Length: 298
Image (tube, rainbow, N blue to C red; front, side, top):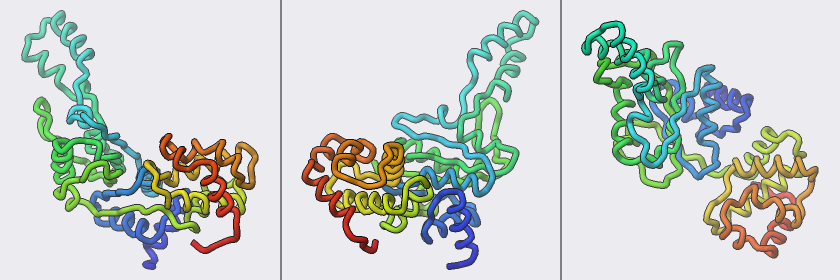
């Protein structure tokens, strides 16, 4: 492994993120090439956490835009502070100012509410990490607008003119693949798909995120989760669910899996009632017996 990439691996692990070679390489190239990084994978796989760790690695601010259906440009870019504008306009009228002067007064930066995209562009203290989370939830129109912003890192506000980035931000976009991202945006980005972890990687993640869990318990949890993901579930549990479950078991004082405690805590990793039915009592017992059996390689 290239020494610089190994250095990224080591630094990310010190910050609590277990990165394999493809992840570390993608982070290294996104940082060096200053290109947006599009990260796809199942929910709970560590995509959002990757951006948070990158911000800590670069010792800079994380600015997050959470996407959702119906997200519009104003919510993502800027809005005017209308209540404050109205109050200032009334005061200006009492001061005897005319309409053109009042308009120039209230449509100025002090009355501008910067939303995540504009905030990332106008940050003066150095380039931030801009996280565009779950871009697949936004519609095609917003995706086209975002592509334009990422191409030029400048925006035009009619009342103020064109605002250009003081520092080009590092950009991470995440997608759970609820819809297909357009080719134009994909071509603009480096690409990374985060797979579910191997057994050994998942055990390492448990140990670093839940240090109170013993190696023995972490390995049982890892084997159990590996087996659960092979089942035809509606919502396959990710690493986030693994960590939640390990924390729950530690808080319950358990250092060994058994069918009863797994059934009682299944809500930590199963988030759909059909999946709960799919893994019935007999199935859970078989999975627990397998997880508590002899050690096997990942």
